[in-house]
Image 1 (cartoon, rainbow, N blue to C red):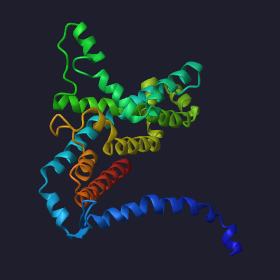
Image 2 (image 1 turned 180 degrees about the vertical axis):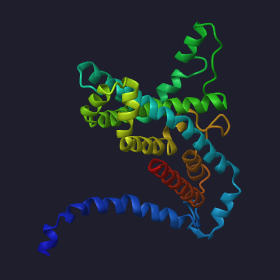
Image 3 (image 1 turned 120 degrees about the vertical axis):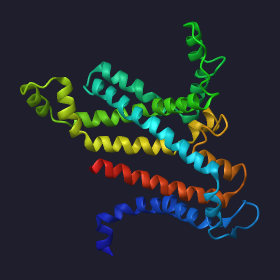
Image 4 (image 1 turned 90 degrees about the vertical axis):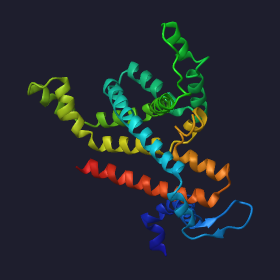
Length: 283
């Protein structure tokens, strides 16, 4: 017993307990209840694979998966290259760079609902500042939140704006860990700034690149608050991402068991995307 108390693994017990209670146990309960029909009023009724068979015919669920994937393809490149460009410009420690870092990091610290509401006012068709500038320049206002393609693009811009500061700081940490001797050797060999970055710095950021990609994919694919406040899934179902569709099924239609089944499928799709990302990184 004394040996166990002195063991360093004892310090992992609180973290393991937290993981079990707040992660593993809820995930297990989702898997179990996905086989039941439940409306929070009457007792759960076992339906076997009924929820999953119904899911195969639910075109709006698969539409929400496709919307989430489209949003992923639109947003992740911007969430990678914009923070990378900012990090390259600001990774050196100066007073001015520290002020700009705080400025770009500020949107990430802002509460999601407050930031999204501000963004919604900015993109308003009649009263938004952005359309006011466009009209002042002599152009027609853009229906940012009233048509499918602009609305999806607006969500992508919102997510990029909110994530840039965090991902920029990840890149800055990676850039500061690259030894300066490699840059000096490249300059001695006659490499210009672009060649030094592309052939020396960028390959040495491979672990940081993977961290940034997985973080961006995770945040974009599970985004709920931004879409809920900005568009509510509209117009129509054009921005109805999967987390929002699951929420509406559970807490608007009160089909809790069916929503759990969708959560299980969404979890498996998320896991598949994570595996593909890691395989691409290995290659």
